[in-house]
Amino acid sequence: MALGYARETPGAHALGPQIDALTEAGVDPGRIYSDAADRVRSADRRAGMNALLDYARAGDTTVVVGIDRLGRNIREVMAITRELAKRRIGLRSLREGIDTDDPAGAMVVGVLASLAELDDLSPTPASARPLTTTHRQPASTVGRPRVLDDEQVLRAEQMRAAGESVPRIAQALGVSRATLYRTLAERRTVR
Image (cartoon, rainbow, N blue to C red; front, top):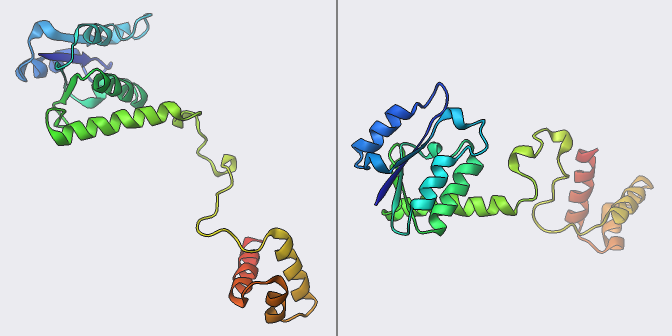
């Protein structure tokens, strides 16, 4: 059974055109659930979505005008898609052409549901993470681990400052000349 859902956003997405589009797509007007903008401040902001989820059974399909109508933010959209997938309720979005009856559409919804699960595992919501570089954690190095630790690099710099040759320093530290040259060059660019 096709179940429609419409969510109003003040000034942008009125319920009327959404309900018309859902009806034109074959959804019975008696099975269209909606959340009006005036309910946003009430205790149950998602009464329409909750009613749809209470009524829906495995094998039913939820039809929306656009995937963004499922929630006010990506977290809500992903939570609803995960809930629908978990309960084996289909999803069809008219604007994006997503339909879980189609293998490609099922894959897209599966990816959204998986992302929701990953987001739930994250200790800090992405929206709360700082965007400035002053709050970032130090970047980890890419590639192989460094051969020389900080103490050995300091010793190599001291030996080089004392006039020792690079081949002799490399031999004393047990590394190749190329490794020593690269390490010393990296240290100069970091400073």
